[in-house]
Length: 142
Image (tube, rainbow, N blue to C red; front, side, top):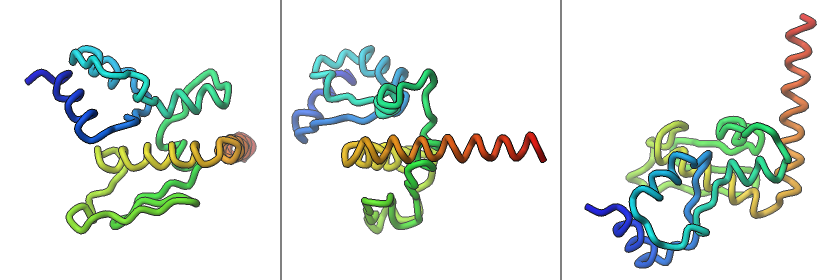
């Protein structure tokens, strides 16, 4: 099967407007090698978007981003402060960090929060960094 043709057919059949990745260098390389000829501007690397927005030297992991934004996976839903999505019955109990469906949901909600308010996301990530510094100082002084 030609994966590039498959990706193009899925994107056009279902009118896909965005494809989200997180730290997607490998994902983007796979898409490029597949022969996909569609619009590459639909592919959004959420990790890179956050890195640029925060003017960071390093990238923030998906786990740390979700902690900062309070993105939570539960057995029957994925939620953040502003969004909540219930899972279909056949997917309940399968939502976990570091598996395909769980990470796809976490990336999606991180982007939804970013799209809702980049200012709020910046503030939450800054707060997370302050908490990390405080914890590190406590460990060094304790």
